[in-house]
Length: 121
Image 1 (tube, rainbow, N blue to C red):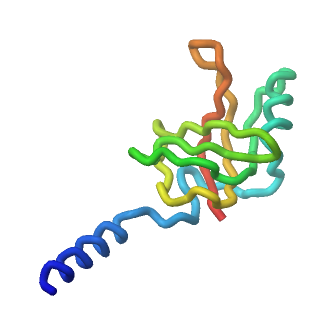
Image 2 (image 1 turned 120 degrees about the vertical axis):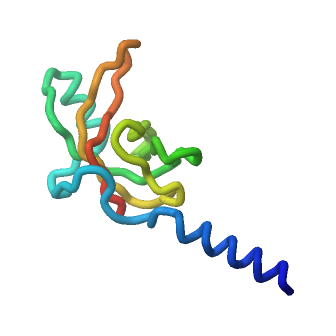
């Protein structure tokens, strides 16, 4: 019985340390005017270097430090790297989310979306 109590106590302490799977992470922002990733990427590739608000469902989350999430919308899945600014809750898979950020061309020539904030609903 004593071992069971210790295990339950340890499990409850671990659960309390996880971030909630909903809320605002990083910079707070108004979630109006969200577009899908494909539309925002096409605008960026067309020369519009702007801040975008994109929406989707969280398909995957970094289980190490919460340093990235992947969004799924329509038939596209795309990576959102948050490690330099904030971390994401590891239990947010399947949640609807909105991200605000900019597209950036990496040194390798790839285009990635770097968010300033994410709102999980």
